[in-house]
Image (cartoon, rainbow, N blue to C red; front, side, top):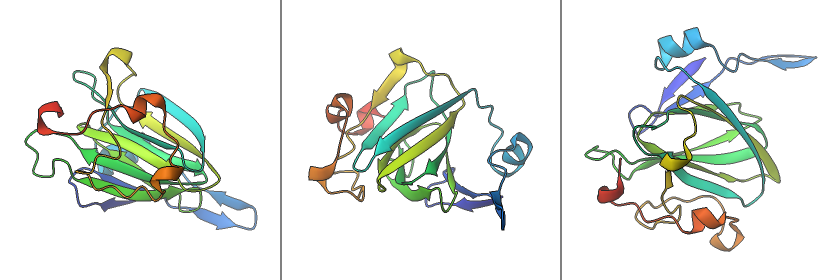
Length: 181
């Protein structure tokens, strides 16, 4: 696998080695040994999957301390724009984001360390999205920020009038230093 640094320290793009022939393709989607040595020693405890249609935007979600999560995300069918926003108080990149297209074609993954809010938009007719988490889901720690917060300047690749949001995601607060983790 190739590990590619992004503009924000710790957020990494992972490109697996894909072997193709007349039968199709094969790749290791995850190896604890390789991940520990090339990315970070993280112990994932929960895998999640969602299926969404074009225009769905999910996020920006995170869990409050002490249940913060690191995530390894990928799109197994379709195409998404995946976004990680630094919400760590005092971080030199606070409020900045990394946006990466993940697709079934490019097979890229994104590692998002603890201290980031996460979201994605579906750019294809539908997408299946998977993510590994290093902390279990805790409903009492569930939190988020408004994904259309103008201070973040995120281009989700979808016109505002085409966005499909959950009721919860429509009512998250704006990101500000006081609400960071």
